[in-house]
Length: 134
Length: 158
Image 1 (cartoon, rainbow over the protein chains, first blue to last red):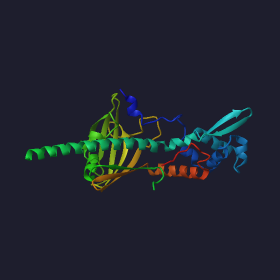
Image 2: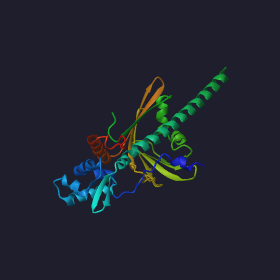
Image 3: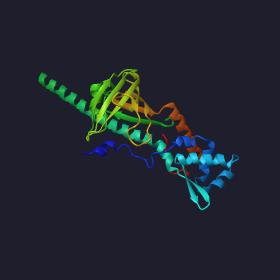
Image 4: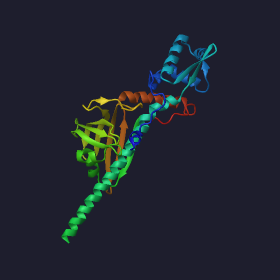
């Protein structure tokens, strides 16, 4: 009984359910800029906003989207709100490629096995015929 | 070089090209090996020609069933097969991956088969639709610009 083996090619990433996907989060240049800014260390919302010409409200909106897609976590610390980057989220995007590689590697293993089998069978049949001729 | 968000797998088989090609395009062959190890496959529809489909049911050792589908775009014997693969329902409609992972609903696969001294090499290219590719390109650009050093956990996108 190995139901797990059957499904093991699919690895569930943490926190799969998200309101928005990562692509949406990265679609906007300002949001990418924000991510870059907070990649090294968490900053509070005001410090982030100061770096941009657009309004604080606009930045806040961007941060909201980033947090909805899981790229940023907003945390209240005293009277300030801090933004922390979550780069792990980006790996989810590449996951399908990894999963797909696994699937096809397994399929090709099966195909290889099958090809060996049927070719061996063919040979046996041939040599039997050959034997009869003798 | 692989396009972004494109998967390339190259695999050599110790068999003539014709046979490798048939193993993937003849239902009687395909049903013998396709599917995860230990599972069994039963064919719903096998209309393996351009525009046709291969619709199959998979039954796992614990009796879980699911359906999969290939839609063929191009079949040139014995060198090329282009098809879209997806999960499906029993009627053959495309469904999202029945697992809790992010996975494209449909993937375009291109098999190229070449033969040399009795051995066949399959080059498989898998990619998602245009929209996903554009999105993936944006992501790739982002990672390039902002550097893997910062986003240490980021693995290659494709």
